[in-house]
Length: 193
Image 1 (cartoon, helix red, strand yellow):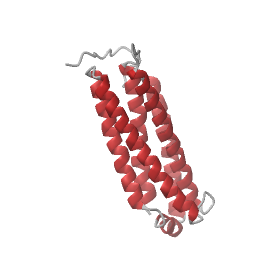
Image 2 (cartoon, helix red, strand yellow):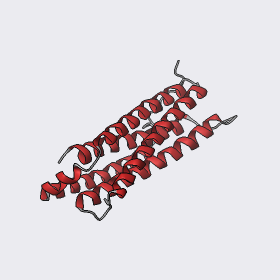
Image 3 (cartoon, helix red, strand yellow):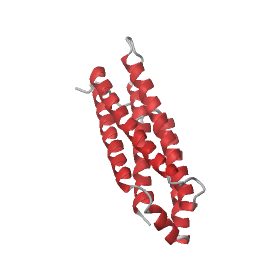
Image 4 (spheres, helix red, strand yellow):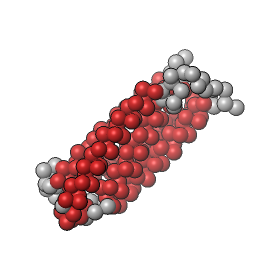
């Protein structure tokens, strides 16, 4: 039985708190503006963008999408288990979430290696300028998300832990933002043009 009641008058009512949602909104706005600029320049240079996109490994992109979506599923279960006062099982889901994030980073690293090995860098052309800037900015968010996951999981498992549902939901909200941003980046970078 869920013993956590929502206090609708509390400023922290949105899962993770209002400040986390302000951060998420600003991050989505930032990525959104960059994607609009990407599409604009893609319309200006359609042949270049198409040929450049063909150099991306859409299979890697699809596998990374599966890694992040699966890790998001595990994160949602971590929150549910925490709300059910099962910290051990919640911690197990945290670890599965971290494995998904780590697999994303490893495969993205392989993809970056192949790009650099092929001589494709930030200054190759406008498509790859956007590709590198958007994916590295997202990668930084995934790394930050993993740090937050590790920190929250560690705090949650301490004896006499003061980690609360707000902390776990803030962690989950940030992680799901990483998922959402990738769900915007993947089709625009890997499938369109």
